[in-house]
Image (cartoon, rainbow, N blue to C red; front, side, top):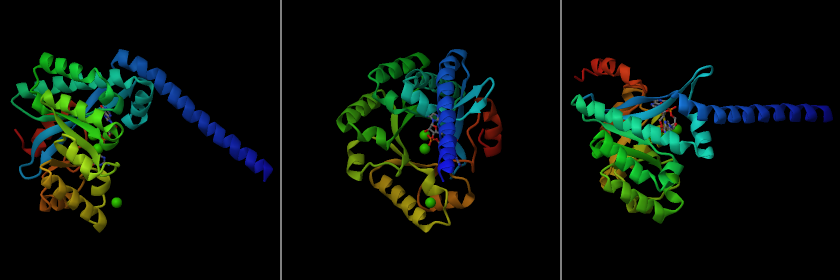
Length: 278
Ligand code: C2E
Ligand code: CA
Ligand code: CA
Ligand code: CA
C-alpha cells in the first residue's frame, strides 16, 4: 500500500508539473504571440430564424501558434486574465471588432458585433476612453457594438459595475449578459443593471427537446427577459428541433452550429450563399 501511495503521488506530481509547465509555456508564448500577431478573430453569426438573415456576429478569438497549432481560448484566456495580459489582448479584440464592423457597414451590412469582455478589462478605468477613441477612429456606429459580460463580473462591486455600465452605455453601445442563468445574479439585480440583451446559456439549450427541465428553464428565461424588455439570444443551438422550440417560445435570434460555427471573415461569402442572404 505504501509503494502504491508513492507511485500515486509521483504520478500526481508529474501531472501537476505538466499542467504547471503548460501554463508557463502559454504565459511566455502569449507575450510573443501578441507581438507576432498570431491571433485571429473568428465570427459566429447570430441569425434571425424567421428570416434566416444574419443580424450580428460574436467575435471569438483564435490563437494559431507556429508549432502548437490552434490553441483554444478556454486554454489561454484564463491565463491572460491572471497575468494581466488580457488588457492588451482585449484591446486588440476591441480594435479588430470595430474594424470588422466598419467593413461590414461599408458593404451595407449593418450587423451587430458582440465582443466578449474579461473581468479585468471591464474593471479597467481606461476601457471607456479606449473604446471611445476606437469608435471615433473606425467610424463604426456605436449601436452596432454589443459588449458581452458575465453575471459574476457584475456581482462583486455592484455600485462600481453600475457606474461603469452607464459610462459604456453613454458611448452608445449595448450590454449583453453572457451565459445567462449559470451565474449568481438575482432578478432584483438584473433590474438595477442597465443591460439590453440576455444570452441563454448553451447548457440550457443543448438537451432540448429531451430534458423537460431545461425546456422550462429556457422558456422561463425568455418570458422573463420579455417582461424586463430585454432582447434574448439563444446560444449553442445545434438542431432544428431547438430552433422550433425557441420560436414557439418567442426567441428568434439564435447562435450555434445549426447555422454556423465561428468562421474567419474570408468564409462570410459562403455563409451568405448558404443562408441565401445577399
Ligand atoms: P462564450 O463567450 O460562451 O462563447 C461561446 C462558445 O461556444 C464558443 O467557444 C463557440 O465556438 C461555442 N459554440 C458556439 N455554438 C456552439 C454550438 O452550437 N455547440 C457547441 N458545442 N459550442 C458552440 P470558443 O470560441 O471556444 O470560446 C470559448 C470561450 O472563450 C468563450 O465562451 C469566451 O468566454 C472566451 N472567449 C472567446 N473569445 C474571447 C475574447 O475575444 N475575449 C474574451 N475575454 N474571452 C473570449
Ligand atoms: Ca460570449
Ligand atoms: Ca456564452
Ligand atoms: Ca441539461
